[in-house]
Image (cartoon, rainbow, N blue to C red):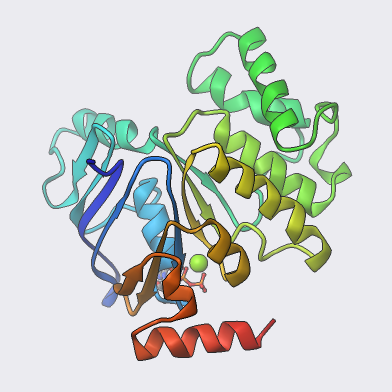
Length: 254
Ligand SMILES: Nc1ncnc2c1ncn2[C@@H]1O[C@H](COP(=O)(O)OP(=O)(O)OP(=O)(O)O)[C@@H](O)[C@H]1O
Ligand SMILES: [Mg+2]
């Protein structure tokens, strides 16, 4: 099987700080990958590079049939933007804090991208938004403003908003870390459902128990390289000393 997502030799520096030092990874269609690692190891930068919110210095990112070699981007600006746009459109991003538009209702937030970016007719976008709200357990809340929702509900709208653009892979960056503990479960439940439905997921999370349940693949990032990779068993029985130490710290913090 050809992987849906393939990253080779990804490198990124901020000034003289080498944050990603040659990251290679592959994600099969319909699987969930959990990306773990200490603060500053480059997890967010990997996700942002996949969604091309960050332009890597070197490396190839391919999602399905859209591929960009960042070492040799097209010189022509329009061509470059087209290549980046095609790649970006294949993934959707869910951020730590939901980033909803505060002045728009839930429905407004959900149809903004499809109508403005994808030129979907408004009625279709609304119909699709209703289905997505149902999927994240928020049927009937389309007229609420973000401030009228709990953090967990806002984050579920954030997930629905990313899904509204029909990404082939959903990237989630610590989707529950900004939430009060009692709201974490409802968001993880939605992500679990998406995994069960076969959506391809890449999730940065420190929720180890959740990771154990959903992960088909575990990647442990340390110092800008993938220090260990494997199936969910990596979480139970890591080989590398730094993975062991990291997991011990995370589990202790719970
Ligand atoms: N835009 C930026 N400009 C300068 N440095 C940055 C930028 N973005 C990230 N960095 C640095 O790159 C390193 C990796 O950051 P990144 O956010 O990818 O780490 P992370 O693994 O997601 O960490 P955390 O667990 O704290 O979210 C950090 O040292 C960070 O300070
Ligand atoms: Mg991060």
